[in-house]
Length: 176
Image 1 (spheres, helix red, strand yellow):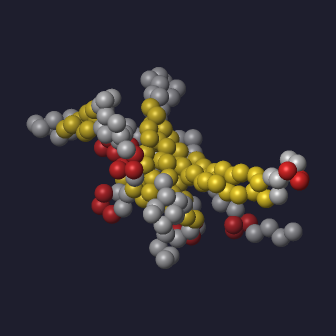
Image 2 (cartoon, helix red, strand yellow; image 1 turned 180 degrees about the horizontal axis):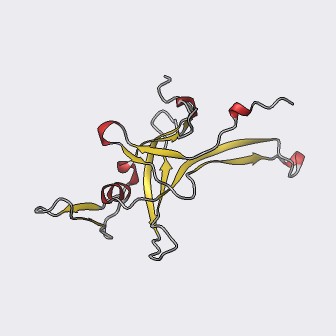
Image 3 (cartoon, helix red, strand yellow; image 1 turned 120 degrees about the horizontal axis):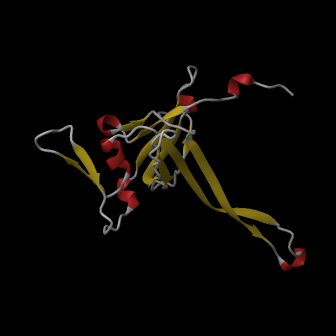
């Protein structure tokens, strides 16, 4: 067996959520960014073969990216809390707060944008990128205020399919 060590990848990444001037980059993480791709399926059985499956059919696919973001940044926090509002003091723009309204019913599709995982390895190329063309954020905050823990904002970006059906792509996003 021949092993191609160049195809073995390791290391941290950054996440780019959105495109162009409105893109938000998450570069400080703790605990590793986790990409999850899952398939659901159904086995096809017939009376004549009992419980032995004759074939299996994929019935669905899901993709998500979990990002343990390590910086406290009100603008980025507001961007990953759908329906939240960033309030800036009119006399001092350095004074900000993020307000979350519990009475809103939120359609996550309205907050979905392209998400790209970009490995930070010195030899990484766009061929190493992973892209969810339509991903919406969900945040779970569990801050522990003590000397032993950083404040980590756990964000999970859930992938939704485009009208064409594309859910996730591996490799250079510029390839058409």
